[in-house]
Length: 129
Image 1 (spheres, rainbow, N blue to C red):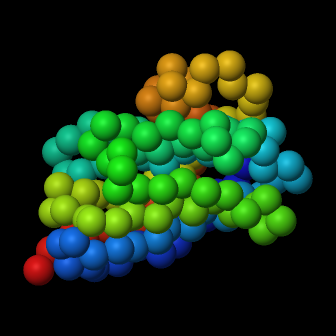
Image 2 (image 1 turned 60 degrees about the horizontal axis):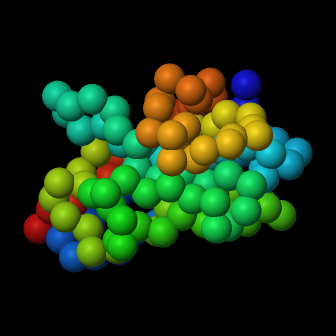
Image 3 (image 1 turned 30 degrees about the vertical axis):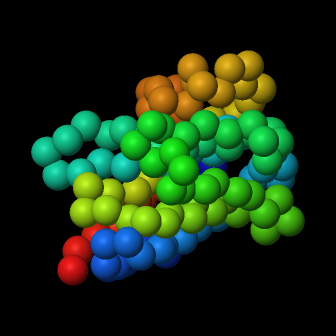
């Protein structure tokens, strides 16, 4: 299992922007699928976004498509989630997760939290005025 550390959460106003970071203890980040999940109080954990071996090999849930952008800095073994046009409904604890590839179909794999074996501790994002 990998050691994952999220950072960047906080309080932001509706319409604002926040960028989360996930630092991974791994030699080759592009060997892994790195996913962002979130869980709001009383709700199930849901997949938000995922990235695998190339910058173009990404997944976004319908609820964040067009507002969130996932990216990777392989030199720093860090994955970022830039969140724009934030809404109160985006309030949740955001978790970073990792699973070793290869991943054949990222659109099938990434929404399944059970497929990921390494998880971070989570970071709180609150969208409120």
